[in-house]
Length: 80
Image (cartoon, rainbow, N blue to C red; front, top):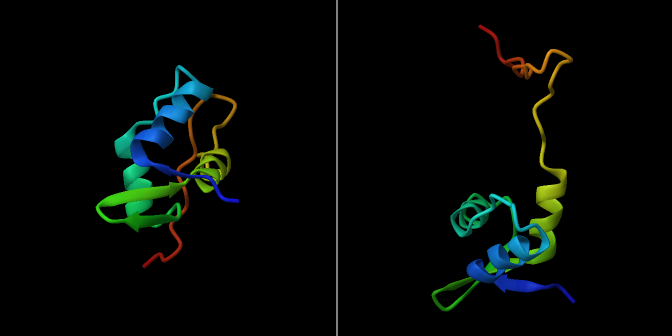
């Protein structure tokens, strides 16, 4: 069964797992609104698929960092 959590609950569970986490309720809300994680409206409340949130946070693309500590800028696809 999928673990569904309210925005506050999802952010609080992440804080329990990692007390130093910078993940906030607003960040989780933005991910849901942008369609990056699945959510369901229950009346006026947004239920977040907590397992999908954790998977997104574990697999989100990180910018490549060179040995000098400088991140690489992605190449543009459509050059004119």
